[in-house]
Amino acid sequence: MITGVKKEQQEEIIDKVVKNCPKEYDPTERVLICDMDSVLYYATYFPDDGMIEFNTEEEYEEEVKFRIRNKIQEITNNVEEWFNIKSTVLFVGGKNNFRYKVFKDYKANRRDVVKSVYFPMATKYIIEELGAVESNGAEADDYVVDCAKECEGKCVVAAIDKDLRIHLPNIPIYDYRNHDDVLGEFKYITEKESRLARASQILIGDSCDSVPGAKGIGKGYCEKHLHQDMTDYQFIKQIFIGYLKANKGDAVKAKLEIRTYYIVLKLHTLEE
Image (cartoon, rainbow, N blue to C red; front, side, top):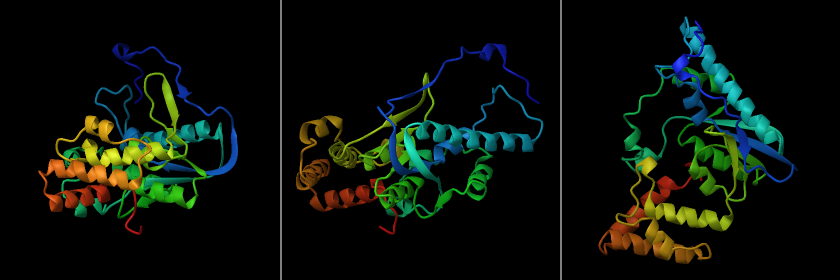
């Protein structure tokens, strides 16, 4: 049953606000594209010292479903205050992500992470009851990027993944992560910032996804050798030089690593 708030867990109520909002309402008709993977993790997380107890599994499941619906409504309300949303599309992670075939160590650091026992139920619910699209063969991020392209940029993307911000220049991103006094935050990236961020990522890699990048090459190297006004050729040249340095002049190995990490880090589906 619901037991209420434990005394030792009582906290001061903080008014949360949406940060970095647009200066004015945008009447352009847009599609709201939501990456729901993080919502599922949030909705199915019940810490052992939680404030609420339930009598049955059904009550747990109903709480999970409520959390999902409530988060979607929160996202919708905060985005629609500033943008003219004509429809909403939900994406959720599926199976057979091609990256595991390209790079065997992809997300190796997450293999021991145990998902909630309610995760399969929550995933099924959001697909069958709320109409989310399952990203079979790739990741939800990949489907989000493809959908944004199909909308020709007339969209708002709701997600917390930094990779989406890197790959979606000039598109409003609503980061729905709640923390401290933040209810959510609008974020933007220009085309030049996007190109620089993607080039830097290929060199540095992505520790969250266990992609090592060029060994010994870090942010300092990127800050020194990359800048926003470089051409595609200049970016490619500096990336190649970095990997040559990491592989002690072995051009074949350098090219193989660049090609592999580029495929893994770039957001796209196999259809592209």
